[in-house]
Length: 269
Image 1 (cartoon, rainbow, N blue to C red):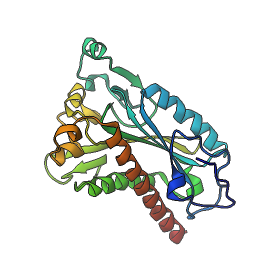
Image 2: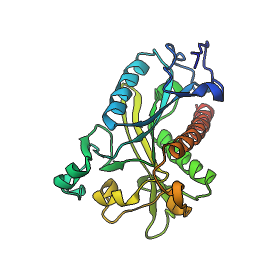
Image 3: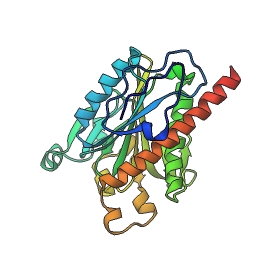
Image 4: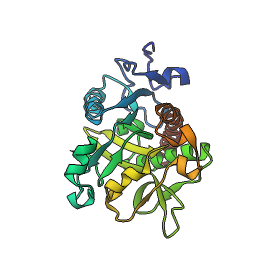
């Protein structure tokens, strides 16, 4: 897509926000435009190994911190992998090293918050690379925006979901005794810029969650849009196209939720 350069704080149109691995513009909006709409360049990476996407995040964080690019949102579907957050305990990886090696599933220690998480085909992973201060947004409202955007995507598909107090992410029946986790969330802020993000189960093979105590919660029940909607056939299997479509909906929902957060912050200022 053609790089767009605009003065001040601006919001590019929908067709400009979505691209297939298009390089982001060289110059982002200037700091200090609190509460104003800002660019959120969205990049669809397709199915990609975790380490490759992880390196890409760090490259963009450095560029965003230096003000060379606008805020970014990476959308990706990963090959099967387990990632351990900074609070992770090895005992929450239930599968043996031999089983993981046989299946080709790597275990990677990363710098995000939270516990052990599974990523794999059929799951939307979104990494927001956002300089929070430029938007006048604090971390807690940003987390709430990510959770709300996941719930918005679920609602588009006809699934009711929401947040659960004390347990970040997106949950079906969050107030019941056995809620089902639809989406996970884990972040890191580096040089004032966010990285890592969310994982929303679209048509994920849920049996793979048996490899771990997801999010460090023994007995946690994971779910997906496919399971909640009782999809059959191709929709019930991992599909990059399904993940891509869900990703575009998530990008639109997050942009809207971030505008709401910024508007509230501007009114309170």
